[in-house]
Image (tube, rainbow, N blue to C red):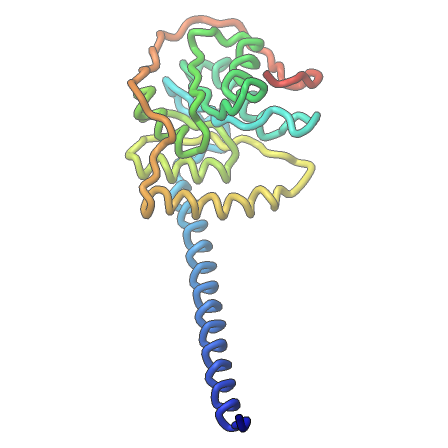
Length: 250
C-alpha cells in the first residue's frame, strides 16, 4: 500500500488540535477550580469574623463549651494544638464562664480516644465529672458541631479551638442555624504551620461540598442525650495539668 504523506499530516494535525483543545480545557478547569477554592477559603474566613473571640477576658458566659478533639501527642511530643485547647477550657471553668463541657473527638480504637483523653485532663484539673459530657462520634468537625445540636440538644455554645479551625467550625454551625461563637486559642509557636494551613484550605472546600452539594450528614446520629445544665457551684481555683511529663494515651 502506497504511503500517503498528505493524509498522514492531516491526521497528525487533527490529533494535535484535539490534544491542544484538551490541554486548554484541562488548564481552564484547573484555573476555575483554583479560583473557587480560594474564594471558598476567603468566604469561610469572612463569615466568621464577628463570631471569633481572641481574648479569654471577653468570652461571655456560656452554659456549654464544645472542645474539638485532636491528638494529645505527636509521637512523644505534646501537641500544642491540644495543650492550648485544654488549658483554655480549664481557665474558662475556673473563671466560671462555662458551666458544662462537651468533649468531641475521634474514638478510633481502644488506644486512641480523644474525648476520654480530654476528660482525663479536665478531671485531673478538678473539673467535676458531672460537668463533662463526651461525644465519641466527633470523627470530623461537621460531626462534632451538628451532633452538639441534634444529639446533645444545644445550639448556643462556645467552641474552643485554633483560629483557622474556628472559621470552619463556625461555617458549619451557620449552615445549621447554630448560634455559636468560638474562642481562638494559640497554636504552635515553633513552626509556621503552613502544612496545616494548606490542608485547611482543602478541608474548607470539602466542608462546602458536604454542606451545599453532597448534603453529607454526621456518620452517626441517634436519640437525643440532652446536656444537663447544672447550676453553677463554688469551686476552688484549678491548676493546669498539661505541662507535666508525657504519658501514653488511652
